[in-house]
Image (spheres, each protein chain N blue to C red):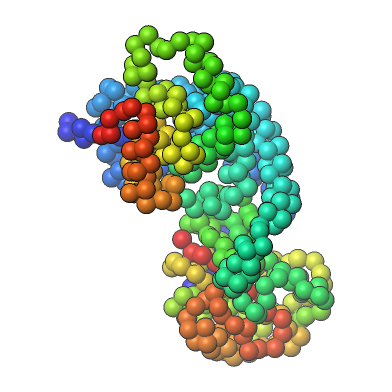
Length: 177
Length: 254
Protein backbone atom coordinates (compact mmCIF):
# COMPACT_ATOMS: atom_id res chain seq x y z
CA UNK A 1 0.00 0.00 0.00
CA UNK A 2 1.18 3.50 -0.71
CA UNK A 3 0.24 6.74 0.90
CA UNK A 4 1.01 10.10 -0.65
CA UNK A 5 2.52 12.50 1.82
CA UNK A 6 2.88 16.18 2.36
CA UNK A 7 6.30 15.52 3.83
CA UNK A 8 7.82 15.45 0.39
CA UNK A 9 11.51 15.55 -0.14
CA UNK A 10 12.89 17.87 -2.71
CA UNK A 11 14.71 16.24 -5.56
CA UNK A 12 18.31 17.34 -5.39
CA UNK A 13 19.93 16.89 -8.75
CA UNK A 14 23.66 17.30 -8.37
CA UNK A 15 23.33 17.46 -4.61
CA UNK A 16 24.95 14.12 -4.07
CA UNK A 17 28.35 15.43 -3.12
CA UNK A 18 26.97 17.46 -0.26
CA UNK A 19 24.91 14.53 0.94
CA UNK A 20 27.83 12.19 0.68
CA UNK A 21 29.83 14.58 2.81
CA UNK A 22 27.13 14.52 5.49
CA UNK A 23 27.11 10.72 5.45
CA UNK A 24 30.89 10.66 5.67
CA UNK A 25 30.83 13.03 8.64
CA UNK A 26 28.52 10.64 10.46
CA UNK A 27 30.69 7.63 9.62
CA UNK A 28 33.82 9.54 10.67
CA UNK A 29 32.42 10.46 14.09
CA UNK A 30 30.79 7.15 14.90
CA UNK A 31 33.05 4.55 13.38
CA UNK A 32 36.34 6.14 12.30
CA UNK A 33 38.29 5.15 15.42
CA UNK A 34 36.99 1.57 15.45
CA UNK A 35 37.71 0.90 11.79
CA UNK A 36 41.11 2.57 11.82
CA UNK A 37 41.93 0.66 15.02
CA UNK A 38 41.12 -2.64 13.31
CA UNK A 39 43.22 -1.75 10.26
CA UNK A 40 46.16 -0.68 12.38
CA UNK A 41 45.90 -3.76 14.57
CA UNK A 42 46.17 -6.03 11.56
CA UNK A 43 48.48 -4.12 9.26
CA UNK A 44 50.84 -2.50 11.76
CA UNK A 45 51.69 0.25 9.33
CA UNK A 46 50.16 3.70 9.62
CA UNK A 47 50.10 4.44 5.91
CA UNK A 48 48.69 1.06 4.98
CA UNK A 49 46.13 1.31 7.76
CA UNK A 50 45.00 4.71 6.53
CA UNK A 51 44.66 3.42 2.96
CA UNK A 52 42.75 0.38 4.15
CA UNK A 53 40.44 2.48 6.29
CA UNK A 54 39.67 4.72 3.32
CA UNK A 55 38.95 1.66 1.17
CA UNK A 56 36.59 0.26 3.79
CA UNK A 57 34.58 3.48 4.03
CA UNK A 58 34.61 3.77 0.25
CA UNK A 59 33.02 0.33 0.08
CA UNK A 60 30.41 1.47 2.59
CA UNK A 61 29.59 4.49 0.43
CA UNK A 62 29.58 2.49 -2.81
CA UNK A 63 27.39 -0.28 -1.33
CA UNK A 64 25.26 2.10 0.63
CA UNK A 65 22.08 0.04 0.16
CA UNK A 66 23.66 -3.06 1.75
CA UNK A 67 25.40 -1.02 4.40
CA UNK A 68 22.28 0.91 5.31
CA UNK A 69 19.99 -2.09 5.67
CA UNK A 70 22.44 -4.07 7.79
CA UNK A 71 21.14 -4.35 11.35
CA UNK A 72 24.51 -3.16 12.58
CA UNK A 73 26.60 -0.82 10.43
CA UNK A 74 29.49 -1.40 12.83
CA UNK A 75 29.35 -5.17 12.32
CA UNK A 76 29.32 -4.56 8.58
CA UNK A 77 32.30 -2.21 8.70
CA UNK A 78 34.38 -4.40 11.01
CA UNK A 79 33.72 -7.45 8.85
CA UNK A 80 34.73 -5.59 5.70
CA UNK A 81 37.76 -4.06 7.44
CA UNK A 82 38.92 -7.44 8.70
CA UNK A 83 38.54 -9.09 5.32
CA UNK A 84 40.16 -6.22 3.51
CA UNK A 85 43.20 -6.17 5.79
CA UNK A 86 43.60 -9.93 5.71
CA UNK A 87 43.57 -9.75 1.93
CA UNK A 88 46.18 -7.01 2.00
CA UNK A 89 48.32 -9.19 4.22
CA UNK A 90 47.79 -12.20 2.00
CA UNK A 91 48.80 -10.11 -0.96
CA UNK A 92 52.10 -9.33 0.67
CA UNK A 93 54.00 -12.41 -0.36
CA UNK A 94 56.75 -11.88 2.12
CA UNK A 95 54.44 -11.20 5.01
CA UNK A 96 54.96 -14.50 6.73
CA UNK A 97 58.71 -14.41 6.28
CA UNK A 98 58.93 -10.77 7.37
CA UNK A 99 56.79 -11.56 10.37
CA UNK A 100 59.01 -14.46 11.34
CA UNK A 101 62.15 -12.38 10.88
CA UNK A 102 60.73 -9.60 13.02
CA UNK A 103 59.77 -12.07 15.71
CA UNK A 104 63.21 -13.64 15.72
CA UNK A 105 64.89 -10.24 15.81
CA UNK A 106 62.82 -9.22 18.79
CA UNK A 107 63.17 -12.57 20.48
CA UNK A 108 60.27 -14.24 22.20
CA UNK A 109 58.50 -12.10 24.74
CA UNK A 110 59.96 -12.42 28.24
CA UNK A 111 57.18 -14.58 29.61
CA UNK A 112 56.38 -16.47 26.43
CA UNK A 113 53.57 -15.91 24.00
CA UNK A 114 50.88 -16.64 26.58
CA UNK A 115 51.66 -13.45 28.45
CA UNK A 116 50.67 -11.39 25.43
CA UNK A 117 47.28 -9.85 25.37
CA UNK A 118 44.87 -12.21 23.65
CA UNK A 119 44.48 -9.88 20.71
CA UNK A 120 48.23 -9.71 20.24
CA UNK A 121 48.54 -13.46 20.49
CA UNK A 122 45.82 -13.92 17.90
CA UNK A 123 47.47 -11.53 15.52
CA UNK A 124 50.80 -13.20 16.17
CA UNK A 125 49.37 -16.51 14.95
CA UNK A 126 47.26 -15.38 12.02
CA UNK A 127 49.74 -16.04 9.25
CA UNK A 128 49.56 -19.78 9.87
CA UNK A 129 45.90 -20.03 8.90
CA UNK A 130 43.65 -19.68 5.91
CA UNK A 131 41.68 -16.49 5.37
CA UNK A 132 38.40 -17.72 6.80
CA UNK A 133 40.00 -19.09 9.95
CA UNK A 134 41.82 -15.80 10.36
CA UNK A 135 38.56 -13.86 10.11
CA UNK A 136 36.79 -16.25 12.48
CA UNK A 137 39.58 -15.99 15.04
CA UNK A 138 39.55 -12.19 14.94
CA UNK A 139 35.79 -11.89 15.25
CA UNK A 140 35.71 -14.45 18.06
CA UNK A 141 38.76 -13.54 20.11
CA UNK A 142 39.15 -9.84 19.39
CA UNK A 143 35.59 -8.66 18.73
CA UNK A 144 34.35 -11.16 21.32
CA UNK A 145 31.45 -12.14 19.13
CA UNK A 146 29.58 -15.33 19.97
CA UNK A 147 29.95 -18.42 17.78
CA UNK A 148 26.52 -17.68 16.33
CA UNK A 149 27.45 -14.09 15.55
CA UNK A 150 30.70 -15.14 13.87
CA UNK A 151 28.82 -17.75 11.84
CA UNK A 152 26.28 -15.15 10.73
CA UNK A 153 28.97 -12.61 9.86
CA UNK A 154 30.91 -15.11 7.75
CA UNK A 155 27.79 -16.79 6.36
CA UNK A 156 28.85 -20.20 7.63
CA UNK A 157 27.20 -22.71 9.96
CA UNK A 158 28.00 -22.71 13.65
CA UNK A 159 29.63 -26.20 13.46
CA UNK A 160 31.88 -24.98 10.63
CA UNK A 161 32.99 -21.98 12.65
CA UNK A 162 33.46 -24.13 15.75
CA UNK A 163 35.68 -26.46 13.72
CA UNK A 164 37.72 -23.54 12.41
CA UNK A 165 38.21 -22.13 15.88
CA UNK A 166 39.13 -25.55 17.27
CA UNK A 167 41.71 -25.85 14.52
CA UNK A 168 42.99 -22.39 15.38
CA UNK A 169 43.24 -23.29 19.06
CA UNK A 170 44.91 -26.66 18.43
CA UNK A 171 47.46 -25.28 16.03
CA UNK A 172 48.12 -22.39 18.36
CA UNK A 173 48.74 -24.75 21.24
CA UNK A 174 45.84 -23.28 23.18
CA UNK A 175 43.26 -25.25 25.02
CA UNK A 176 39.86 -25.09 23.45
CA UNK A 177 37.36 -23.68 25.87
CA UNK B 1 22.32 -2.60 41.68
CA UNK B 2 21.90 -5.94 39.93
CA UNK B 3 24.21 -6.29 36.98
CA UNK B 4 24.73 -9.10 34.52
CA UNK B 5 27.94 -10.87 35.49
CA UNK B 6 28.97 -11.64 31.93
CA UNK B 7 30.84 -8.76 30.36
CA UNK B 8 29.46 -7.61 27.02
CA UNK B 9 31.75 -8.48 24.13
CA UNK B 10 33.96 -5.79 22.66
CA UNK B 11 31.88 -5.38 19.52
CA UNK B 12 28.70 -5.07 21.55
CA UNK B 13 30.27 -2.34 23.66
CA UNK B 14 31.40 -0.54 20.52
CA UNK B 15 27.91 -0.84 19.06
CA UNK B 16 26.48 0.62 22.25
CA UNK B 17 28.89 3.51 21.99
CA UNK B 18 27.79 4.09 18.39
CA UNK B 19 24.14 4.13 19.49
CA UNK B 20 23.26 0.97 17.58
CA UNK B 21 21.73 -1.00 20.44
CA UNK B 22 18.06 -0.53 21.15
CA UNK B 23 15.60 -1.07 23.97
CA UNK B 24 16.32 -3.71 26.60
CA UNK B 25 19.68 -4.63 25.14
CA UNK B 26 20.86 -1.01 25.28
CA UNK B 27 19.60 -0.59 28.83
CA UNK B 28 21.27 -3.80 30.01
CA UNK B 29 24.61 -2.86 28.51
CA UNK B 30 24.35 0.66 29.91
CA UNK B 31 23.55 -0.67 33.40
CA UNK B 32 26.46 -3.05 33.16
CA UNK B 33 28.90 -0.35 32.06
CA UNK B 34 27.80 1.95 34.87
CA UNK B 35 28.36 -0.75 37.47
CA UNK B 36 31.44 -2.49 36.08
CA UNK B 37 34.75 -0.70 36.37
CA UNK B 38 36.39 -3.05 33.87
CA UNK B 39 33.84 -2.33 31.15
CA UNK B 40 33.80 1.37 31.98
CA UNK B 41 37.51 1.43 31.29
CA UNK B 42 37.03 -0.43 28.02
CA UNK B 43 34.23 1.90 27.04
CA UNK B 44 36.42 4.91 27.82
CA UNK B 45 39.22 3.43 25.75
CA UNK B 46 36.94 3.52 22.70
CA UNK B 47 36.31 7.22 23.28
CA UNK B 48 40.05 7.75 23.54
CA UNK B 49 40.60 5.74 20.39
CA UNK B 50 38.12 7.96 18.54
CA UNK B 51 39.72 11.13 19.95
CA UNK B 52 43.14 9.93 18.87
CA UNK B 53 41.76 9.09 15.44
CA UNK B 54 40.25 12.56 15.03
CA UNK B 55 43.51 14.13 16.17
CA UNK B 56 45.46 12.13 13.63
CA UNK B 57 43.02 12.52 10.73
CA UNK B 58 41.05 15.69 10.22
CA UNK B 59 37.63 15.20 8.71
CA UNK B 60 38.78 16.90 5.50
CA UNK B 61 41.67 14.48 5.12
CA UNK B 62 39.42 11.53 5.86
CA UNK B 63 36.74 12.71 3.46
CA UNK B 64 39.17 13.43 0.64
CA UNK B 65 40.82 10.02 1.06
CA UNK B 66 37.53 8.13 1.06
CA UNK B 67 36.20 10.02 -1.96
CA UNK B 68 39.42 9.20 -3.81
CA UNK B 69 38.99 5.54 -2.91
CA UNK B 70 35.35 5.62 -4.06
CA UNK B 71 36.47 6.89 -7.47
CA UNK B 72 38.96 4.06 -7.77
CA UNK B 73 36.34 1.47 -6.80
CA UNK B 74 33.47 2.58 -9.02
CA UNK B 75 35.12 2.42 -12.45
CA UNK B 76 36.98 -0.75 -11.46
CA UNK B 77 33.75 -2.47 -10.61
CA UNK B 78 32.19 -1.62 -13.96
CA UNK B 79 35.25 -2.63 -15.91
CA UNK B 80 36.28 -5.85 -14.25
CA UNK B 81 33.30 -7.64 -12.84
CA UNK B 82 31.92 -8.95 -16.10
CA UNK B 83 35.19 -10.16 -17.64
CA UNK B 84 35.87 -11.81 -14.30
CA UNK B 85 32.83 -14.03 -14.55
CA UNK B 86 33.75 -17.34 -16.07
CA UNK B 87 31.71 -18.97 -18.80
CA UNK B 88 29.99 -21.36 -16.40
CA UNK B 89 29.15 -18.55 -14.03
CA UNK B 90 27.87 -16.40 -16.85
CA UNK B 91 25.61 -19.23 -18.03
CA UNK B 92 24.41 -19.71 -14.47
CA UNK B 93 23.67 -16.01 -14.19
CA UNK B 94 21.80 -16.06 -17.48
CA UNK B 95 19.74 -19.14 -16.63
CA UNK B 96 19.13 -18.90 -12.91
CA UNK B 97 19.63 -15.36 -11.74
CA UNK B 98 18.44 -13.22 -14.61
CA UNK B 99 14.79 -14.30 -14.42
CA UNK B 100 14.79 -13.50 -10.71
CA UNK B 101 16.20 -10.06 -11.25
CA UNK B 102 14.13 -9.15 -14.22
CA UNK B 103 11.55 -6.62 -13.08
CA UNK B 104 9.02 -8.06 -15.49
CA UNK B 105 8.46 -8.05 -19.20
CA UNK B 106 6.41 -4.91 -18.92
CA UNK B 107 9.37 -2.61 -18.88
CA UNK B 108 12.68 -2.76 -17.25
CA UNK B 109 14.64 0.03 -18.70
CA UNK B 110 14.41 3.57 -17.60
CA UNK B 111 14.50 4.86 -21.18
CA UNK B 112 13.40 3.38 -24.46
CA UNK B 113 13.60 4.40 -28.06
CA UNK B 114 11.41 7.43 -28.51
CA UNK B 115 12.59 9.17 -25.35
CA UNK B 116 10.06 7.95 -22.78
CA UNK B 117 11.24 6.77 -19.39
CA UNK B 118 10.54 6.63 -15.70
CA UNK B 119 12.69 6.99 -12.59
CA UNK B 120 11.85 6.35 -8.97
CA UNK B 121 13.85 8.64 -6.74
CA UNK B 122 14.20 7.51 -3.13
CA UNK B 123 15.02 9.87 -0.31
CA UNK B 124 13.83 11.55 2.81
CA UNK B 125 15.32 8.95 5.14
CA UNK B 126 18.53 10.78 5.94
CA UNK B 127 20.58 8.74 3.46
CA UNK B 128 21.72 10.15 0.11
CA UNK B 129 19.01 10.21 -2.52
CA UNK B 130 19.25 7.49 -5.11
CA UNK B 131 17.33 6.02 -8.03
CA UNK B 132 15.59 2.67 -7.66
CA UNK B 133 17.28 -0.10 -9.57
CA UNK B 134 15.55 -1.32 -12.70
CA UNK B 135 17.28 -4.69 -12.36
CA UNK B 136 16.59 -5.85 -8.81
CA UNK B 137 14.28 -5.12 -5.89
CA UNK B 138 15.29 -1.83 -4.31
CA UNK B 139 15.40 -2.00 -0.51
CA UNK B 140 13.76 0.91 1.29
CA UNK B 141 14.95 1.99 4.71
CA UNK B 142 12.44 3.04 7.37
CA UNK B 143 11.23 6.58 6.68
CA UNK B 144 12.29 6.61 3.05
CA UNK B 145 9.84 7.98 0.52
CA UNK B 146 9.58 7.71 -3.22
CA UNK B 147 9.04 10.30 -5.93
CA UNK B 148 8.17 9.29 -9.44
CA UNK B 149 9.83 11.11 -12.30
CA UNK B 150 9.06 10.64 -15.97
CA UNK B 151 10.30 11.56 -19.40
CA UNK B 152 7.12 11.68 -21.43
CA UNK B 153 8.65 11.46 -24.88
CA UNK B 154 5.72 11.61 -27.26
CA UNK B 155 3.20 10.42 -24.68
CA UNK B 156 0.56 12.71 -23.23
CA UNK B 157 -0.95 10.69 -20.38
CA UNK B 158 0.36 8.89 -17.30
CA UNK B 159 -1.22 6.58 -14.79
CA UNK B 160 0.62 4.92 -11.90
CA UNK B 161 -0.47 2.12 -9.60
CA UNK B 162 1.29 -0.19 -7.20
CA UNK B 163 0.57 -3.72 -6.11
CA UNK B 164 1.74 -5.32 -2.90
CA UNK B 165 2.52 -8.91 -1.97
CA UNK B 166 -1.05 -9.66 -0.97
CA UNK B 167 -2.35 -8.42 -4.31
CA UNK B 168 -3.78 -5.11 -3.14
CA UNK B 169 -3.63 -2.60 -6.00
CA UNK B 170 -3.26 1.05 -4.99
CA UNK B 171 -3.82 4.02 -7.24
CA UNK B 172 -0.79 6.29 -7.10
CA UNK B 173 -1.38 8.93 -9.78
CA UNK B 174 -4.46 9.45 -11.92
CA UNK B 175 -6.99 12.16 -12.64
CA UNK B 176 -10.65 11.60 -11.80
CA UNK B 177 -10.64 7.90 -12.63
CA UNK B 178 -8.47 8.24 -15.71
CA UNK B 179 -4.86 8.92 -16.73
CA UNK B 180 -3.23 12.16 -15.73
CA UNK B 181 -2.52 14.57 -18.62
CA UNK B 182 1.19 15.35 -18.87
CA UNK B 183 3.29 17.55 -21.10
CA UNK B 184 5.41 15.78 -23.73
CA UNK B 185 9.17 16.15 -23.84
CA UNK B 186 12.44 14.47 -22.95
CA UNK B 187 13.26 16.27 -19.72
CA UNK B 188 12.64 14.52 -16.40
CA UNK B 189 9.66 15.89 -14.51
CA UNK B 190 8.62 14.75 -11.07
CA UNK B 191 5.04 14.08 -10.05
CA UNK B 192 3.87 16.09 -7.03
CA UNK B 193 4.34 14.90 -3.46
CA UNK B 194 6.15 11.80 -2.36
CA UNK B 195 4.92 8.33 -1.54
CA UNK B 196 5.39 6.29 1.56
CA UNK B 197 4.86 2.58 1.16
CA UNK B 198 3.33 0.97 4.21
CA UNK B 199 3.54 -2.65 5.33
CA UNK B 200 6.55 -4.73 4.50
CA UNK B 201 7.88 -7.02 1.79
CA UNK B 202 7.76 -6.46 -1.95
CA UNK B 203 5.70 -3.85 -3.77
CA UNK B 204 5.72 -3.33 -7.52
CA UNK B 205 5.22 0.16 -8.91
CA UNK B 206 3.83 0.32 -12.43
CA UNK B 207 3.75 3.51 -14.48
CA UNK B 208 1.97 3.51 -17.83
CA UNK B 209 2.61 6.27 -20.36
CA UNK B 210 0.12 6.44 -23.19
CA UNK B 211 -1.16 8.60 -26.02
CA UNK B 212 -4.79 8.28 -24.94
CA UNK B 213 -6.18 8.44 -21.42
CA UNK B 214 -6.64 5.03 -19.76
CA UNK B 215 -9.45 4.11 -17.46
CA UNK B 216 -8.02 3.69 -13.96
CA UNK B 217 -10.41 0.87 -13.08
CA UNK B 218 -9.23 -1.09 -16.13
CA UNK B 219 -5.59 -0.54 -15.23
CA UNK B 220 -6.24 -1.75 -11.68
CA UNK B 221 -8.11 -4.76 -13.03
CA UNK B 222 -5.23 -5.54 -15.39
CA UNK B 223 -2.82 -5.37 -12.44
CA UNK B 224 -4.96 -7.82 -10.48
CA UNK B 225 -5.09 -10.20 -13.44
CA UNK B 226 -1.33 -9.99 -13.85
CA UNK B 227 -0.95 -10.74 -10.13
CA UNK B 228 -3.07 -13.88 -10.48
CA UNK B 229 -1.22 -14.91 -13.64
CA UNK B 230 2.05 -14.64 -11.68
CA UNK B 231 0.45 -16.65 -8.84
CA UNK B 232 1.16 -13.83 -6.45
CA UNK B 233 4.89 -13.67 -7.21
CA UNK B 234 5.58 -9.99 -7.80
CA UNK B 235 8.99 -10.82 -9.24
CA UNK B 236 7.30 -12.64 -12.09
CA UNK B 237 4.49 -10.17 -12.76
CA UNK B 238 3.81 -10.03 -16.51
CA UNK B 239 3.12 -6.92 -18.52
CA UNK B 240 -0.30 -5.43 -17.81
CA UNK B 241 -2.76 -5.89 -20.61
CA UNK B 242 -3.25 -2.18 -21.32
CA UNK B 243 -2.06 0.04 -24.18
CA UNK B 244 0.97 2.30 -23.84
CA UNK B 245 4.51 1.89 -22.53
CA UNK B 246 4.95 0.37 -19.10
CA UNK B 247 7.69 0.88 -16.58
CA UNK B 248 7.98 -1.41 -13.58
CA UNK B 249 10.06 -1.08 -10.42
CA UNK B 250 10.17 -3.49 -7.54
CA UNK B 251 10.60 -2.10 -4.03
CA UNK B 252 11.42 -4.01 -0.88
CA UNK B 253 9.78 -2.41 2.14
CA UNK B 254 11.50 -2.73 5.54
